[in-house]
Image (cartoon, rainbow, N blue to C red):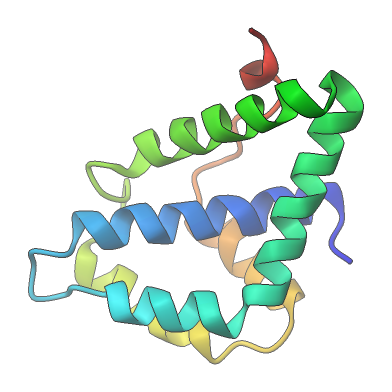
Length: 130
C-alpha cells in the first residue's frame, strides 16, 4: 500500500501521462497506446493511489465534498499539462511511457514520478474548498 506521498505521486504521474498523451496525439510521437498499456499494467497501483487520495479527502471534508475536490484536483493537474510537459517533448514522453509499462512494483513508478514531475504543489487540500 503506497504512502500518502507515493499515492499522490502515482496519481499525478497517471494524470500527467494521460493529459500529455492527448496533447501529443497529433504528433509523430502519439503515445496514447503506450499510455493505455501503462494504465493496464499498473491498474492496481493506480486505482489504489486514487482510492487513498479519495479516502483522505473524505476523512477531511466528508464524502460528498471529497468527490468534488478530487475532480477539481484532477482538473488542476491536467491543466498544468494541457500544453505539454515543461521539459520533456512528445518523443521523450513516449519513451518514458514505454519504459514505465515494463516497470515492476509501485516504488519504481514513484521514483520515476519524482524525476519527471515538477516539484509538488500542494493542490489536493486547497481544491477541497467550496
